[in-house]
Length: 181
Image (cartoon, rainbow, N blue to C red; front, top):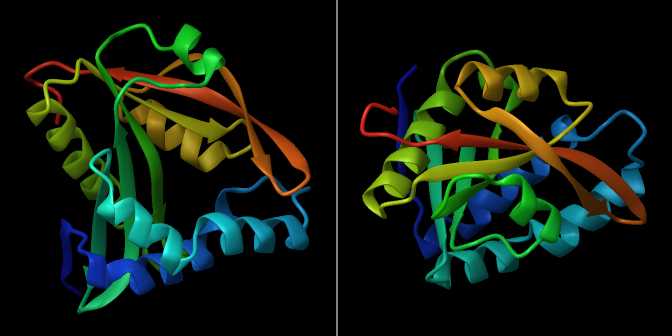
């Protein structure tokens, strides 16, 4: 199976929303209710939301496709963090947030997430960022292991709202250098 990674275009908004709807729950802690997950998908991961991101100068999105079918995506935000907890946690500036990186369960362990991350990191380096940071749910053991393996260092904690539930995320940072993938 051939997997390609490419920069997303406005025409990809429905595909991005489809992947987001299929994958968001995989990153949520076990206690997150289906109602909160559905509300978050409806309000933050809709095709309309992705259209807005794709039209923004701040957002960058990539789409992973396997034989023409969407199987993952990544989104980064260029600019300084606005959350005070993140501002205090991120040590190296200027920085870029790796806001989302999701891969369909059928493609876990195939290297798609790493390739999406590499695309986002390359873009951050091209923009002369000195680091990339992300927030990852503290209970998402699989994702935390993956980010740690990729060199992301634990820097602090932030809080993330999913419906009426407040979730605790680790803030992780990857200092960039010319040798970083």
